[in-house]
Length: 108
Image 1 (tube, rainbow, N blue to C red):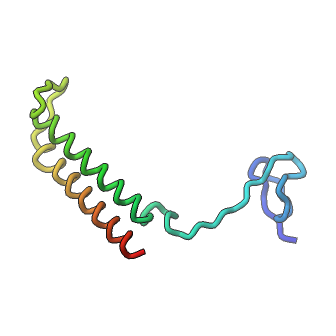
Image 2 (image 1 turned 90 degrees about the vertical axis):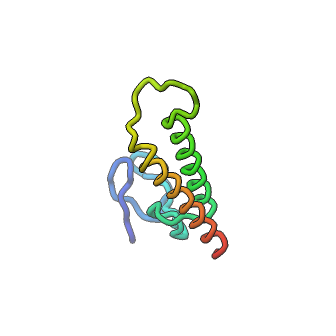
Image 3 (image 1 turned 135 degrees about the vertical axis):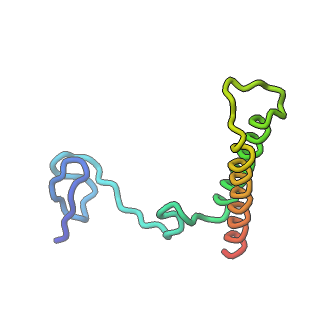
């Protein structure tokens, strides 16, 4: 008989059982996915489109407030390289992620 460990008490139980006979806890079944989201790197296209659009929005908001375009005085001084280098990188990275998600969606 094939055995596995109970995730709660650690004692060996048969693989076919749904409850541990020692601690009476329900043993969760192992669900095998398609592999699309395992590892977090390559999800479905819609998730990457949403992520890219969120990065675009975040880059635009940071640029707007850190650049002083809002007229709102921030409580701390934002270094100049944030608006010169970091915010455009975030914005362009978001555009790239959204395009990659669009490519994934068209391919599937």
